[in-house]
Length: 599
Image (cartoon, rainbow, N blue to C red):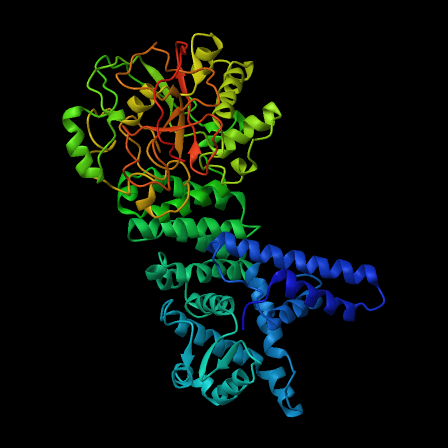
């Protein structure tokens, strides 16, 4: 049977039910139906947020609709906590009396708790088989699993009989048994961990989880474990989550454990600010650990980075427009370099082509030095929170609403060149305000000798190389998807800034994550400052340079020397920007080269 569609099936079922519950009160039935439908929609949204857009639907059958109706009417609303909701739904399911002979009803009234204990024992047995084998079990294996506990043996036949009638949390189909929804199996695994090993100690619970911290199959049971404990013993739940945040024997496991603890505190509304801060700090500590970054997988770090953003990323100061919370507001001084050479040397073209797997363009070949003065570069690309602060302060709407829909600590995207420039102008005014009197960066801007701006192509590449000169990548000559968010990192989207190691200057995400606007027209090398390539006001038909590659690009674009070009009005799901602070204005003149667009 296909899952129910929310609009076509669930909505009319709920409305029809409330037509029967409140036949004479149109207002009550409309309000109660809408309240339940809103909560079901919220549950589905939360499930997709936790497990991804491909997550299975929770309310996928008439039975699930019936259960939620029973819980909603019994308690006047659905519980906010998922663990509490599943607990009440399982009780409602095990105590129902439809399809039973009269003598069976007394049995259900007295034995449903025994059936619940048997179901949770079966749940942990099945879940331990893993994602591929843990969804179904045949009758022989089911009975054998239940016979492991002597106290279950008198009830095994009845338990299987109820499953055959589809009157339990387990149902039979073509000789195999499964839980009526994976969510019930996951909750009962969590309940088992709390009630069986948890009866001994928190450490016993943690020991059961040690081998499963990195396994997505166990994510929901771990989150539901915290929720179940929170319902019954808030202090114990806080202590468990605090200890979970600090556990893990490998870098991957440490990131996973910290992220799980953080996600659980966010689900638990009464977890408390102290615990959330502790979880955020743990994730931040791991992101600042070079060894942990080197030895963990990018998707694990990306998930931790998103959870850090939801917890409140302490790297950024909400009182100062979400700029980095340090004395220089996240700006890093890049020293002058009289011998810097932009691009790739002609002698290295063959080597670079062999590394990236294609012939590099002649547009990036340059053998002449271009002196670069000292300047400051932002440690991170401009984030969603920073761009939102600008929109609110300047009372403007982003040209594309998607620009503000990512996590606060991810890089902003869907921003065109003129919007990026407008952000720079606003930040100049904000930094020059009296609010930041005494700050070194604010003093430079307020004095008028330094300005926040988009980087020139020269400045961008100087910063991106991190002090290295002629390497293929900013970290060396060997491709490494653990160093930057490009397609081989397998994240499949942008990631919170700082999930990858910094370069030699301490700058993050110069390579990968999002393309970054520059203020340079796409013109041929050699690069000569003042030759008109730095564009304060390009036409809509002029190509501008973007640098760094994005999360969706192949490694051949994720290099410091690669040049991309787009029109100033372009917006893209992989196009953002970062800012620099420079001491001199930049001139303009017409373009002479037309590149291929990278978006």
